[in-house]
Image (cartoon, rainbow, N blue to C red; front, side):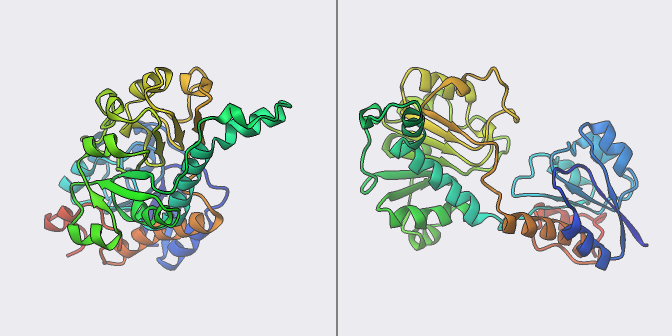
Length: 329
C-alpha cells in the first residue's frame, strides 16, 4: 500500500464507512485513541493522512509530522487543529460543513421551543404529582417575536427558514454575510449589540476561533431582555460561561438551552446543572444515524481525495495552495 492514514481518536461504534472509502484509495488505515500531543505524535509521525475527532493537533504535533499531507476533521469546527502551523508546513486541512444542517437547526429550534414553552419544568412538575400550569407563568406567544442568530452560515440559514414558518422575525449578526444572502433568507443583518437588545431568543452559531472566544459575555448579557433565552449548539467557549451563570442567577435573562458547554463533559460541580431554567444536552445536536454516516464517509473522502492528487471538496485553509511544499501541484 502506498500511503498510511491514522485516525487519532474516535467514539464511534464502527469505522466501516471510513474503511470502505480508504480501502478504495488503497491505504493502510491505522486506528488510535490519542488524548495528548505526545500520543498523537507517536501515532502519526509517519502518517500521510490523519482523521481527527478531539485529539489535539497542535503546532508541536504538526512540527513532528514527517510525511503528513492532509488532516481531515470530523465536523464543522477545526478548533482542535493549529491551522496556521498546518498551512505553514503545506498540510491541507479539511472538514465537513454540510453533514448536519438539518440536525443542528432542528435541535436548536427544539431547544428554543422547549425553553419558550417551558416543557422540561412542566414535565418535571407533573411527574412530581403537581398538575398546575401556573408554575410556567409567564409563557409568551412565539409569533411576532424576534430570533437573533449569532453567525449566519449554512446551519443558521436553515434555522431561519424553520423559525420564520412559526412566525418569528429573524435578525443575524455576521460581518462576513452579504446583503444578497441576507435578503435571500429574509433576514436583517445587524451588529451584535443591536441583536442582543432586540432579540427574544438568541441562537449561537459562530465558529470557535480566537476572536469569537467569549464573544457573548457580561456586556452582552446586560443588553438582553429579561425575557430572553439564549441557545447554543455551536461551541461552548463562544459564550463566557461565568458571565452566563451570573446572568441566569441574577435573572438578567430568562433561561438557556445548551447543547455545548465550556468544558465537555460538564463538571458535576457546574452551577448550570442546578438552574431549573437551563436545559443541557450532551453535544448531540449534530447526530442522526444519517448524519453520522455522512460525516464519516466525507471525512475519509477528504483524505482519499488528497492522496489521489486532488484538493478536497471541504478545504479549510485555502492559503495552503500558495505553499510550495503542498502535496498537490
